[in-house]
Image 1: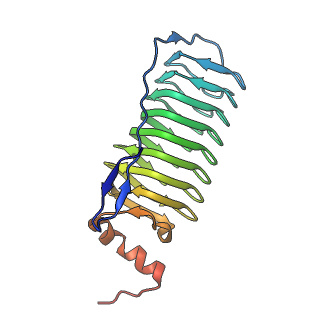
Image 2: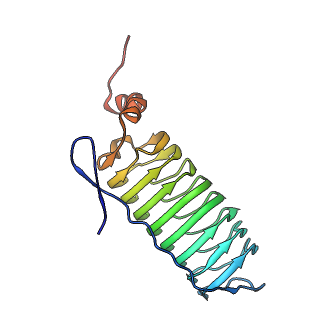
Image 3: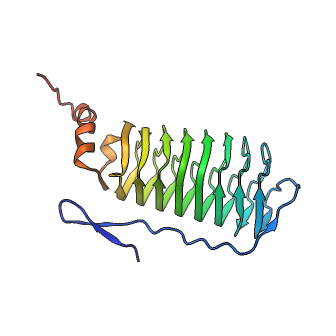
Length: 227
C-alpha cells in the first residue's frame, strides 16, 4: 500500500512506491548484437555499445546496463523488468510503447528519448540529465524523479499517478492534456512550465512555486497584472 503524506491543507497525498530491485549474480552479455523480440535474463551489459541496434519487443529481466551507449537504439515495445541502468548515454533512444517496471535509471545522459505511449511503474530516475524526454500519452505510476535535470520534458496527454519530483530541476515542461493524480512537485527547483499550467489539478506545489508560477497562472486566467 502506498504511504500517505500530509499536505498544507490537511489532505492526504499518496506517496510513490519505490522499486525494490535485487539483482542476482549476473552473466556477462558478450559481444553479440541485440535481437528483435530477444530474451535477456540475468545479464550484465558492462560498457556495451548498443548504438543503432534494434531490440524492439525484447525483454530484459534482472539485467544491469552500465555505461552503455544507446544512440539511436530501438527498444520500442521492449519490456525492462527488475533492471538497473547506470551511466547510460545516447541521443534518440526509442522506448516508444515500452514497459518499465521495477527499474532504476541512474546518472543517465540522454537526449531526445522517445518514450511516447510507454508504461512506467515503480521506476526511479536518479541523477543525470535528460533533454527532450517525450512521454506523450505515457502512463506513469509510482515514479520518482530524484536529483536529476529534465529539460523540456513532454508529458502531453500522459497520466501521472503517485509521481514525485525530489531535488530535481524541471525546465520547460509540457503538461498539455495531462492527468495528474497525487503528483508531488514540491521538490522541483526550478519548476518551469511551458504549457499545461491548467492541468495542475491533482498536483501539490509549494508556496514558493506558487509565487514563481503566478505570471503563468495569471496569463492562463486572462488576468492582467498592473502596477
